[in-house]
Image (cartoon, rainbow, N blue to C red; front, side):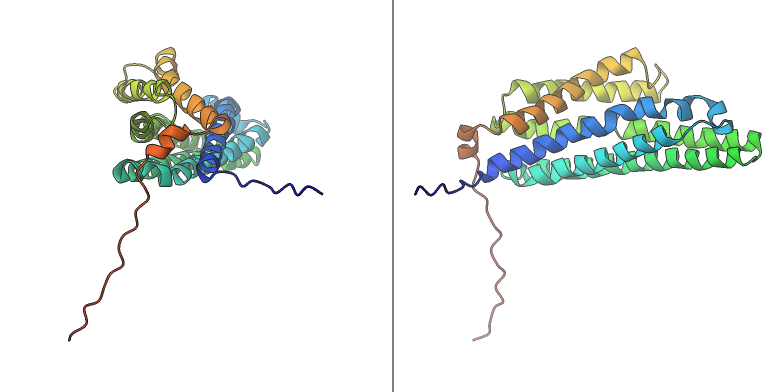
Length: 249
């Protein structure tokens, strides 16, 4: 009788799979949000009407998932990135956490609009409610600019540099991110100073390379993994020597 022992998955392949899936989850969680939020963010009459908030709530759930998955990508890749650069690894984790925090603040602003909407249905003062609602919409707009509008560029500069220099994935993929990062930062600065709207053709064109980089990065890690030859060339994991307490003779 043949004994078919299960071969354990290589740790680096497992890391790439987890990080890749989490990258793809960020797309699934974030992409529907703008469409689901459109009414509550762009139509002041939404707060005064009887429209359903179900779509908005699902959009909020998706963004929370996106934020948590984003942090997960950094945590999963930290052991790999630190073998090349401790600074880049820590920078990637930090930028992902800041991005997630911005996203969650934006979610809270949208959920506050949902609360106002329910108050409007119960006959609250319309003028004050719309005025308050505009404040929450403005808060969401700024969090969207400095979260998904800026931090993905920092992410790309940190982890993209590691991936390009180590060759763990085809260098064309991180090159797209490294080219897209300054484009996204320039677009965010242009939006900040009023050159064009945050949701516009120019913004979409500037953000496309970063979106392409993140999707291709996630898909490659999920389905292909890291190059074994590049993994073999990574520096070995080192641990800090244990502290020794001097003992007097």
